[in-house]
Length: 386
Image 1 (cartoon, rainbow, N blue to C red):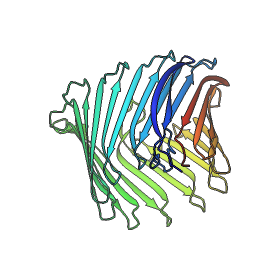
Image 2 (cartoon, rainbow, N blue to C red; image 1 turned 60 degrees about the vertical axis):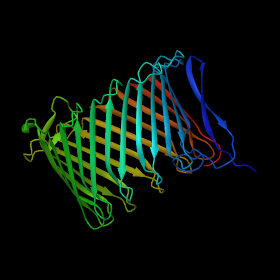
Image 3 (tube, rainbow, N blue to C red; image 1 turned 60 degrees about the horizontal axis):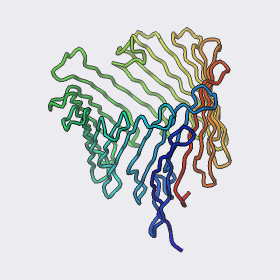
């Protein structure tokens, strides 16, 4: 009996006002084409996402992602097509093409953006990687051609070094924003480890060669662990970047403290932020997790006190359910500010096939008890395998 090779030929048809892409299997004698997790395409060949913005039963946006793999399961190409108005006409096309060495290390990635879906790329980004004998990434060079005129517009280079245990010791990232051969920004990170390979200390520094030294930044992170290698504390001191754009960079101390159950599951995470490093806390947040007997995460409760006055300003709760094979079936995330009215609720329901592969994901978004958006993602796979 012949074994099958599953390849994909993408056909596009106007159907129900939405451009639909699907894979047609081609049968040939030989080995199976496998997805990145083993088996014949455990990762989907196609992924189609439909969004109904106002939950009126009419699709408002469609996105289709089509993947192809080599015989070893390496992702060769991803085609991302967007029909922004669900009118059967493509509006955006993004294409990513990868190549690998004999050990499966990613050597080159070419990303092309076609902003009007006319078949001609409008921007091209290329990344080339090199590795040592242990397959550790030594160097990555990314180049951008924003106008596809053959002239580089920006170049970024990352160089790594390792110890004998392949722990990352140092990373130097240089950004040349106008591709003139002179770096405009340099980030340097230096790491140190204990005998078990746990990261003990990380020193980060940013500089702008030829620029104002007042813009230079740096911080130091120090970690501690328990006997099982679980991270107990993390303290970062120095220049920190706020999530608030109006605040930007500031000098402060960011610390976290973790606790675990007997099975090593994280049950509590306490985060404290001292913005002025004056010993007075400014922001405090806590996360509490609970698990079932199989260590599946059942519930997460998070609270954030933005002015550290002892009263939580943000409340979030996530509840999960699983099937007997530990696949996530449902996830409900609800959060609110202050006293709880109004609240936002996001729920996800997953469906799997007999082989345990995710075939459909339905996401419902609600605000103050009213649904305002619905998104459905459908995956298709190759034959055989898991």
